[in-house]
Amino acid sequence: MNLGKYSIGIGDRFSHQGKAQLRAIMKANKSGVNITPVWNKSNREHIYVKSKPEDVRQEADNAVKDLNFKGQYFVDADHINLDTVEPFVESSDFFTLDVASFIGKKSDEKDVNAFLSSCEKYLGKLDIPGIQEPLEVTKELLTEIANKFLAATQQASEIYEYLKEKKGEGNFITEVSMDEVESPQTPIEMLFILKMLADKAVPVQTIAPKFTGRFNKGVDYVGNLDQFAREFEEDVLVIDFAIKEFGLPQELKLSVHSGSDKFSIYPIMTNILKKHNKGLHLKTAGTTWLEEVIGLAKAGGDGLDAAKKIYSNSYNRKDELCAPYVDVIDIDIEKLPSVDEVNKWSSEKFVNTLRHIPDHPDYNLNFRQLIHVAYAVAAEMDTEYTNLLKKHEEVIGQCVEENIYERHLKELFVKSKLIS
Image (cartoon, rainbow, N blue to C red; front, side, top):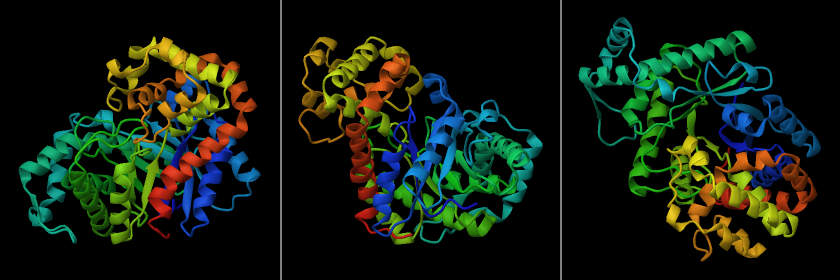
C-alpha cells in the first residue's frame, strides 16, 4: 500500500464537510498534481464530539462515491498509541503512531549498547549528499540519541506489530509522529531515529518531526524562516540518505503536522520539494472546523447567533479548552474581544475577524486560536449545531472548499507546478 508522493490530511470534527474537502482536492488535481486525500481524526476529537472511527470511514467513502473520485484515499487513525488504537483497527488504513510521550524514557542498557555497536561505521565525519557540512558523529552523541529516542521507536515498533497482526502486513500506511514535544529533533537525530525504525522493521512512509519555531493551531508559522528552511531541506536530504542506507520504503517523506495556515513556509517547502523532487504529507486538522464557524457567521441569522454563542461559551471556558493544546496555541488574552463586543458584531465583522487573511485589518489571531480549540463547545450544542450545518450546507461548503483550495493546495502545490 503506497501513499503517493503528495498527500493532505483533512480533519473534519463533525463529519459534514467531506465532499467540500474532496472538491478542493479534485480541483487541485486537475492542474496535473496528484494529491491523495487522507481523512484524519484523533481519539481526543472523537471523545469530544462523541463520534466513532467508523464515522470517518463512512464520511470518506460517501464523499468519494458521491463525487465519483477515482484516486486512492485513506482514513487516518490520528495520534494513536497502544492504549487507543483498538477502536480504529477496522475502519482505518493509515495510522499515525504518536510516540512523543516515550521520548527520553529509559531503555535497557543492552539495547542501547546493541544500537551503539550497529552505528560504529558512522562514527566520525558523515557525509550526507546535498548537506554542505559533514555530520559529526561521536559515541557520546549516539549514546545521547539512544537514551532519548530508543524507547520511542520501540513503542512505534510495538504498535506496528499489533497492527500487522490485526490487519496484515502491507495493508496500511504507517506514520511516526514526534511533533508534540518541546524540543525539535535535529537532522542528525532524525537520521538515527530512522535507523532505529529500520532496525525494528517499521516500514514508515511518513515521519512527523518537531521543527524549530511555533506551529500553533490554525495560524501562521512563528519563527526564523531561514532556520526552518535549513532544517526542512536537511531533513529531506537525511530521509533520502536513510532510504538508501537503511532500506526504508522509497515512499518515505516528511509529514508536517499543524500544517494548515502556515502560509509563510509554504513557498520554502515547495521550493525545496521541487529542487529535490520529493514528496510531502501536510496535515491540516482543524482549519475545516474554523470554516464551519465562518460559514455559519456568513449565513447570518441563526447561523451568526450560533457562531457568537460558540465564542461566548469558549471565552468563559478559556483555561479548560486551551489546556490540552498548550504546546500548540499562543493566545494573548488581553487581545481577545469581550463577549459583549462580539455580540454586537455584524456577520461581516465576525467573518473577517476569524478568517485567516493576515493583512486584513479585522483579523485577530487570538480570536482564531480560541475558536480553534472550542469545537467541544459546538459538540455540546449537539443537534442545534449539526442541524445548522445541514441548513447552511451550501454556504459552509463553499467556505471549506475555497479555504482548502485557495489558501492551501493552490499555494503549496498548484502555483509552484509540483507534478507527481
